Image (cartoon, rainbow, N blue to C red; front, side):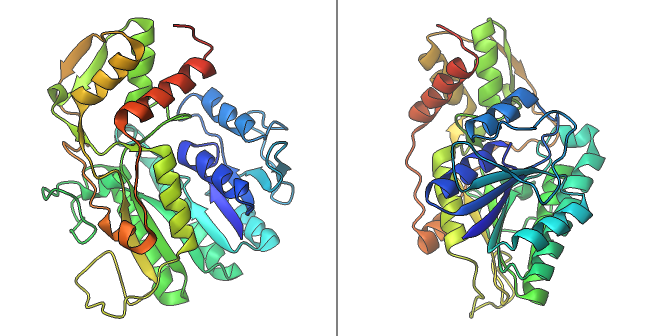
Length: 355
């Protein structure tokens, strides 16, 4: 297939693009390389992808001139803002994609409290440009990133896609729920097969510097304390990046289909070719146990500042991913100890740190 993967200077997008390129798909990656977090990590991901030409800050490639990877022959990269409707449109018209894997977004629950407009521009306006471009260029297979954050005030555990998600507690979550509803509309009106994936706390090599594993590892190596929210009484369905990418690729290979038995009660399915899946490990881990895995790998005890829960944070995330397993055979297999260990090995190598 010829596949557009958005967000390929980002964490999940980077790994997904390389997985698809390795199996021989014709992949174009897209990102705007913004400075939400340390851009050195984003440029590092691009360099790891073989994209090392003309990626200076502020320079945007014309839509018609993607840069080809020096490592992966079927991978090219283009730098465009999602909200740049003109160039997104030209990209779609020129490249004529078979499928789109839309992973780019303004991420972060806490950041959305102070920077709400960034989320509307990227997650709403940007997603609309993706949907419209799919509509007008005949793309019928669209997979897009949602989030476990949409569950908000839901108290039922584990989280099931059949649950209501009408009570988000961050603007980030609200934009992701909006994406799901926008996608359903385009599935119904224009027969675009859309699949939304609610990601659950993804971690691993090339991870985001604003995520707990990165923050905790950095602090431990620098001998600094970490802030542990809700006094450590938090549970997260940590899911290793390789397991996540395997699920994403399986979804791309199995586009959503209309549900012949749809009766209007399950928000994760439809009479339109539309589907929502949870994608997680389905094994929630106590935050303190996660920290212990970091300490064990590093051979260090980390000083901890016990703090109250942050606005917008969920106490527990726990994915019921049985639907995804049923339809695609998805089955994560990486333990916390192995996953944390691989991340720390990558971190030490990337920053050239010797223990």
